Length: 181
Image (cartoon, rainbow, N blue to C red):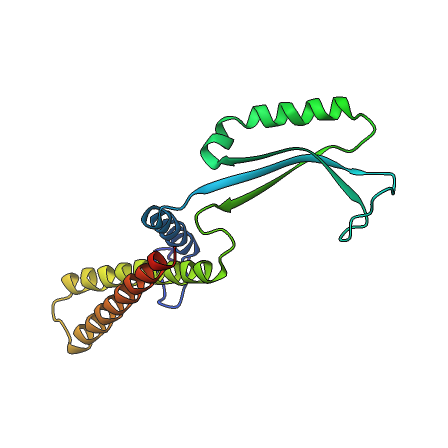
């Protein structure tokens, strides 16, 4: 009979904790940068007759309604958009009326440089969360040990240096993003 209380190996990855770090970093980043989450909703259909041909898909898109709303407002009034799409389906019974939803950030928009900086900031935040958790685990292990080895102190110092480096890089990127926006 195997013992299920075996300790985790150092190489084993905790995917749930990694996902939580990833999500927590995005939430913190959105608060610190003060992003403006918007939704673009388009209700329309593709014209079946070939009187106008779209260059991309070879069909013509007929736009009936278009909305740009803050995401919170979209979540609250989604039923209105669904009702409007259903009404359009009734008004155009022979057409395949669809609604297309696109999520975007109004503050950053299509600025590729700002998106790249934001992704770098996110990576640094995720690594900060992981390293601080690793540091807490090491300190907890040291409190349980009778003798503290010099090797343990070196690893703690190494992790603390990594945390300081990540913090300074994150703050530098944050200042760069503020000047850009």
